[in-house]
Length: 58
Image (cartoon, rainbow, N blue to C red):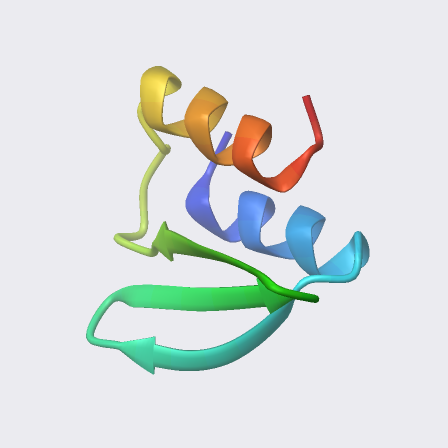
């Protein structure tokens, strides 16, 4: 999955970008915060699974 597709999926599920620090987008939903690196390529499988578990999408 590309980083931009992941960001779009998270936004669709209620996550909002609260700030951008360099190439890292910090998203928040309620009290939860997660960081998504946007480097213009596919997100590594392990990191993708970790982000999806953190956000409750897996």
